[in-house]
Image (cartoon, rainbow, N blue to C red; front, side):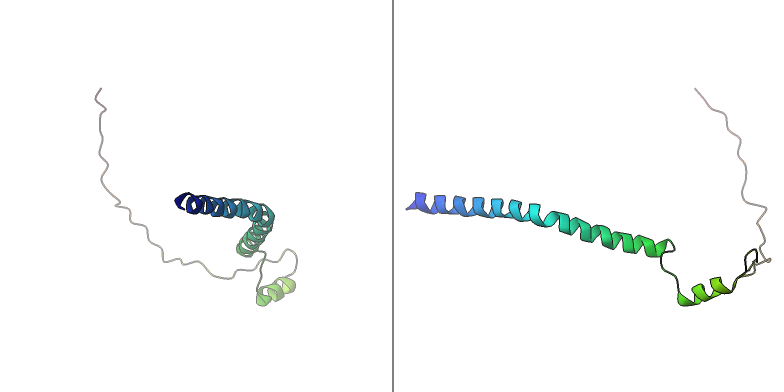
Length: 93
């Protein structure tokens, strides 16, 4: 009785394992295509693939060779000249 239960359990485990392998071979290409398509959409949106309708209208209005400045830079930048103290050192072998 114990041996029959053990054999039945091993058989079920083997069927699940081989069934999973067969299904993985069938559906893996579809899954990879789906993931690649989503990644392409995501990266395409970040690198200029997606444009706002307002941006498209502005690009159509611009003439060739025309320079457009969207934002004027701040001239109030002041650099801190006293950044720190320079320490000279000698390397000891």
